[in-house]
Length: 438
Ligand SMILES: Cc1cc2nc3c(=O)[nH]c(=O)nc-3n(C[C@H](O)[C@H](O)[C@H](O)COP(=O)(O)OP(=O)(O)OC[C@H]3O[C@@H](n4cnc5c(N)ncnc54)[C@H](O)[C@@H]3O)c2cc1C
Image (tube, rainbow, N blue to C red; front, side, top):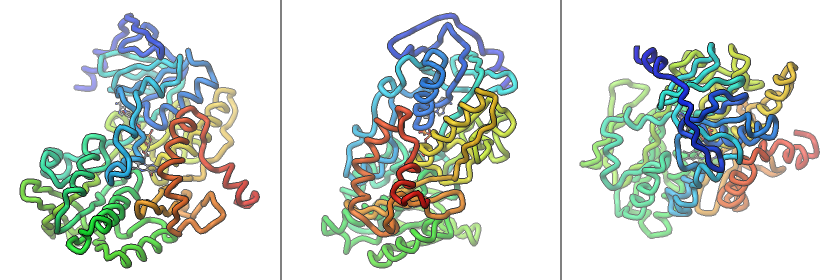
């Protein structure tokens, strides 16, 4: 009923508000050749590429946020190594010039009619659609959250509202348990929940508080990291640094007033354990974007149902997907988005010519596992969980060089390469550095 009501509310307003990026709440032109949903990593980089392919006047992006964030740097913000201000730029500054910015929220997608409906009731029609809506955070699925964040000693690097609380909790740590969690759902950047543990451990050592701290990583997963090559090194690190890892432990409640976290043992449902904390870092449960989940574009689990080779929708050939919102069976990261932009660009150029997509995505994804304030293990792998490393060195080793890649080189590549549609991942460099052998 609610959906029907919203559909009826969809209308064309005929009011045009334009500026440099022709941003609009309600634009006179309600039809675009290429409509991009979401102006995050995937949406902005694809709109830059689509502008080159078909001209800015044919491309529109629907994105409600005034600010665009480079989320991977929040790991370092939570540990005090970067500022939150350095992670964001106005959306207007990253929107490709001339491309229409529809400053609204997508409310409904109707692929049978080739239209979307926005929260202000506007209907926009399209010839081709790129869905880049990211995933949804679900702090509310943990009892006591999100309101628990109003108390001190708790933070979460996963949101711009809570990332600085992590750093505050770490700075104010005196003695007791420093607890880090990993939820019982798919997540974006599966390494981030433990990166902040390594950084916190390093900070507590630097400030002479480590002897008074128990550092605990409670994860829902049955493993420390999904790819054995890197997991082996990580197990060595946790043993060497006396970090306690508890597998199959799922955070279900936070009693922030008492500084207590409640975990369920996933192997013995109903069995719970309460841990008192001096610091708690929460990685929230995550799930598909609800707009996609409620549309015919979703698979059974609610993710955008795309062909894993070419990113074209499985049932609607004029619809494409990229990034965290899709059901591509690889780890959800910005690095994966970068590789996907090159594939999707090629797929769309072929479809526009009525030809068959010919470039195949290998599932490339990457996770710079920050293990201290100056070391990183650069995990890179494909759909099969096989390492797909860019450099001809063993990347499972902790390296200073990789920390600089993470902290300095990658942000630059993001703002000036990926978002401008100029960086499609390290594939060509990997080939070169491995003399064409990989
Ligand atoms: C703490 C943290 C650490 C990370 N570390 C790394 C790392 O080291 N390396 C790495 O590669 N990746 C990392 N990532 C993951 C990376 O940031 C994401 O995988 C990447 O941003 C996904 O891009 P996306 O375009 O799919 O989604 P997003 O960039 O999240 O963009 C989705 C966009 O859709 C918009 N949107 C949502 N709903 C609607 C709607 N209804 N209507 C219109 N617009 C909507 C949102 O406002 C947003 O702008 C990290 C993420 C976090 C949070």
